[in-house]
Amino acid sequence: MAPNAESPLVRLASDSRRDFKNLLSARQRTSDGLLNRRGQLAGLDHDKDASVVLMGSWGRAEVTAGSDDDFMLLVDGPERPGASPSIDAIADVLDTPPGSQGAFGEPVFCDRLVEDIGLDRDSNTNLTRRMLFLLESVPLTAAAVYSGGRDRILERYLDESVKDYRPPRFLLNDVVRYWRTVCVDFAGKEREGPEKWGIRNAKLRTSRKVLFAGGLLPVLESSRFDREAMPAFLREQFDMPPTDRIAAAFLNHGAIDAGSRTLGAYDEFLGLLDDSSFRDELEHLTREEAGKSDAFARVGRLGRELQAGLLALLFETESALPELVREYAIF
Amino acid sequence: MEQSRGDWGDQVSRAWAITPFAVELSALSEVELVPLLDYLSDRPRLPFRYLSVHGPSKGRESDEAELVAQLCDLAGWCDGIVMHPDTMTNVDLYKALGRQLLIENMDARKCSGRTPDELAPLFADLPDAGFCFDIAHAWSIDRSMSVAGELLDMFGGRLRQVHLSSLSDDLHHVSLTEDHEDLFGPALERCVDVPWILEAPPRAVH
Image (cartoon, rainbow over all chains, first blue to last red; front, side):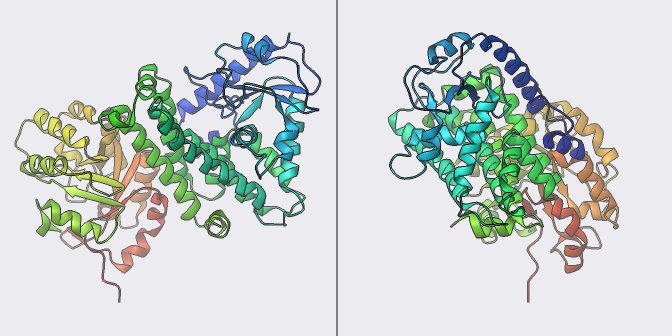
């Protein structure tokens, strides 16, 4: 996951004479951190169907100074108690594990991610686990288990309903549903309490939007392939961080200028997030104080630039993309 | 749009009639800055998605530090402050505006700030500053539009907004002509993600 010349982000940087220094240095930090953590976890006993997976900024290759080690224990096998390694054992090894609450405080069984798509059984937690696994995750251990689990999810989405040279609607709808769920849950969390409103809002405008675009674009681009070729294309896309998927779309659709500004705005946001005083200001910011916050104003401007660039890619490029968006992304 | 000078309500109404997305309010002389700040701070935020202010470009008399302080006050109410390079003497002062400072390329009447080479030292001194691309000014320098392309090659990463119009024979902004719409097309296609500010009323379409 370290920067390399084949990376679409690096190619966009080269073509537009930008350096994306924060994004590329975060990639290097991610790569170094993965190496270090893989060494630390090598001594833990693993069930043969278990994989420790890092999520969030690790999956986006955007680790900054304040990043947590958001992890998931993925089990691609029968549901059972006592899967190994235990959550506690993994948390003991990692530097800054998340709390035991939330979507990843217990083992995640792949069967649930695959079988429970839609209807009541597909809880908010199950949807979150599945989408984050698909869109922003990276294996720390047992990469083959990780890939196998992801392939099973893709197979489920790319079922008999998929047509040649059309975006897979089942997957498209779930990616869009996840983004809208994140937005609705933002409002729900605010009603529960004002804590962390600022940082949540900032991430909704930036990293959550990048995550959504990094899922939406490959799914729309799938329409360039027949159904036989779609799984390989999507696997290749999801092997890359979201910013590479987005950079690839800007390159493929001849929107290098807009792409450089879009990812330039995101690069600037990432640089600001790496500054502890900036992050602290957002962490403690409430809606009532937001109008007086320079940090929030800066995020707002960067978020608008990021969104304007993505909208230009989706609606203004001289390519098939605007037609695809019109035909598939709304209804 | 000269008739709306200093009448912020009229500028806003005229802009709103064209688009709810972007507007640039002009305070082209220093004496207009305080009234503009009063106007913006005395009401709920304007409903545009993007708001810039064109800073003083003529008749500069006041202390430059005082001017920049006023611009910084205005920056709290808008997304960007557009400045002409030839009006900036003590460049370091403008660092206080950060990325909200937008430097505009100049037309053929000026003797600096027109080309990539002339603008490069200013942007080097102001690494956070953005670029306001005046496409008609670029045309006045080079009617083949090569300079326009070079400006975007060089400063495209900083581009935050476009000024769009045609120019009269005496280089005043007039409505975009059909010929210029075609001629400017390739450069404008490189700017589809940033606000376009019309510097003259849109041409009547029959």
